[in-house]
Image (cartoon, rainbow over the protein chains, first blue to last red):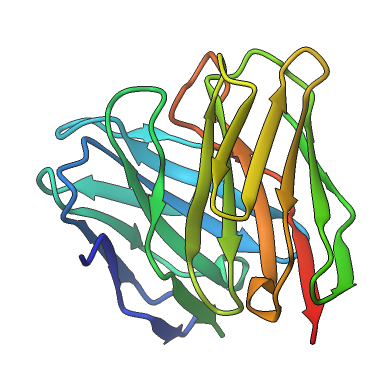
Length: 113
Length: 113
């Protein structure tokens, strides 16, 4: 089972460049999430989508935009990358009910120079 | 704001030893608590999910307990193996926003052969 698939796995950007991180899940989950993981800061929620057609800000949304393209796909866009956005980005999904597990992708390691 | 703490930050044990990892949280109004494993350079793998109404959850050599009133959870690993070496993270969604997981910083476990 593929679960949650993220692309790309690695990316190097120059300051000011833009890019989109892609995420797809095949578990028919309603909710999807984007987190970033930084040393000493742990995992922090950037944006989430409770269901198809909705998106909400998390703890650290500045500098990011998201699109819930359909039930399977949730993309994260950096419009003008900054060195502070150097991080490992994780996509996750869960069913719509509150008491269900979250499943994570393998991550995208992004470096902004 | 929910805060999740994991102590110790790192733990090294000889193979075969039973061990306990700790997780504490400041707001006891939670939907559930989830334990994850993260291998270096990899994503998060869900290990156990304890519902707020449960006291324990078991999977193989893993046993997780939850004491909401004291804001604590423990992950017990029996008969540890070198393959258990990884970072273990706990996460809770607050009652006010069930889908927004707050993560601890993790305990890095090394099991020595």
